[in-house]
Image (tube, rainbow, N blue to C red):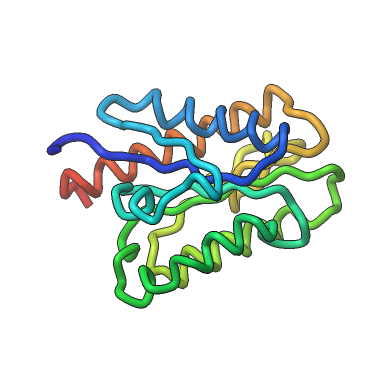
Length: 172
C-alpha cells in the first residue's frame, strides 16, 4: 500500500537480545505508516524477507552470527542470487556478556550478509552516548539493557523505518 512500509526485525533467541529487539521495534513503530513484524528462526519465513522494505537483524555475539540464525539465513541464498533483497534497507543489533567480546565484529558479520544481498545499510550517527553505549554499526547492549541502550535501539529502529518509508515514497 502506498505511503506505508513493513520493517522486519529478525532476531535469534536470548533474553537480552529479545529486550533489545523490542526496543528496535518500538523505535520503528513510532514512525507513522510503518508496520513492524518480529520474527525468530525457525518461525521466520522467506516471505517475511520479501515482504519487508527494511530488515533489521539481531544476534547474540558469538564471535559472529549465532549458528541458529546463520543456518536460517543460509537457506535464503537464492534470494540474494536473484537480487530479490537488493535495495531493501538493512541494519543490525547485538548483545554480549562483556564489553570487549567482539560486538562490532558481530554487527559487521550481519552487515556483511546484508551487503552481499545488495541491501542499503544504515547504522547510527555518532553521538557522545556512544562513548558509553552502542556502536555506529548498530545497536548493542552489554550485560544488561541500560536506558542509553534502549535509546540507541529505538533510534536505530526509527532511522531504518524513516529511511524505508522515504525510499518507498520515491523521496531519495
